[in-house]
Amino acid sequence: MKDGGIFFIISNFNTDPERYLNYCTDYLIYDQSRQEPVKSILKEKYQKIRFVENTGHNLSDYFRFFHENWNSLPETMMLAKGNMIGRHVSLEFFERVVANRVFTHLYDDRAYKEIPGVSSQLCDGHFLELNTSWYMKTKPYRYFGTFNSMLRFIFKDPLIPTWIVFSPGACFIVPKRHVEHYPSAFWLNLKKLVSYIYFPAEAYILERMLPIIFSNTYALNDWMLNTEQFAMELEKVAAGQHSCLDNKRTLLKQRIKTLLHRGVSILRSW
Image 1 (tube, rainbow, N blue to C red):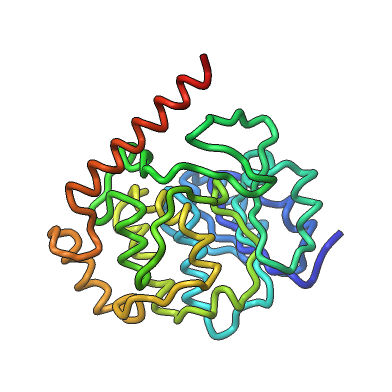
Image 2 (image 1 turned 180 degrees about the horizontal axis):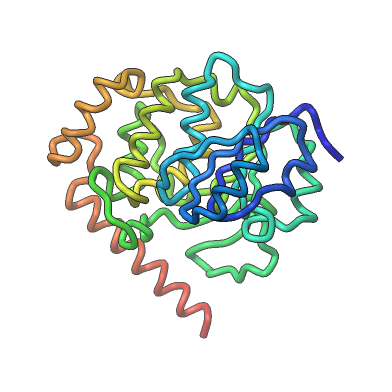
């Protein structure tokens, strides 16, 4: 059944997101496909579609939409991926929550096996992970090597979490108040942070940080409100001259914590 009260923002790559149009009356597709036959089909099939650069992830499309439409945001938005159903959510879970008008994590994986002391699922939609920034070894990055350093760069005096609750895949239902809480420049700055190269590891950090961002809990640092100041502060980070960065002692503590939790996990599995 189509729902006229929710606007679908669909980040798409080499697939046809037609099934989502069965659930909404308004939408915008950002297509990052590389296959020309796919792009040709989509161009003929959809009027509300934009062909954008391939950044390797969906975050850039959401941030682009927030920035460009900040003065006319829909009341409720679904942040979806073209392959979300079947990869990040089951059809049953999706249909159960698609009518939500509150902030909702779009993720469920009943087959997931808990890793004691490392990761777990609190409930459908809420994945719990030890805050070790382990994923930063999988992609190149220029600015932030840890979750904690980016969190301190974005917000004033945030609580540094031992555990992180997030939605793998970064798909959500978001009321506009959670987006317009921040100025347009903030979303443009985040877009730059995840698209300065193809799929920087900072995108993995922001995937995990989105629930904190959408919670509207912390005050922003001043440079997050201005694109020019943001760029200058970011270069300080790149040069290793910013107060937000973790020092060697902090990084060592984090590595020890990771090893201890892994050791406990191994002992529990015996």
